[in-house]
Length: 100
Image (cartoon, rainbow, N blue to C red; front, side, top):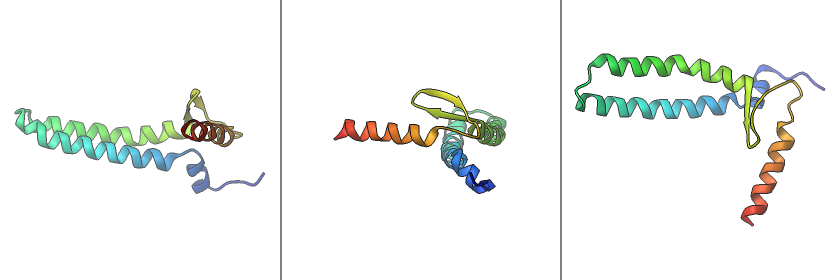
């Protein structure tokens, strides 16, 4: 088995997907907070707190994406010999059969 580089490991653990999804959802939440909080007469620090919490949560989400894998079977801890590709292929085949 060949050694994978950092970029390959990040792709294998779906860290980039989690980062992209987190960025989109965080951006959306910030936009909602920026528009609605002044209308509700909430102080400015509440909006800043939302942004700060989202920024603090970003590295935590990446660490959890690295350590755990969410599958149809539930949450599983990732290991060096992760069975994810076979499980994903089996799930994908089941979904395709279900739609066909």
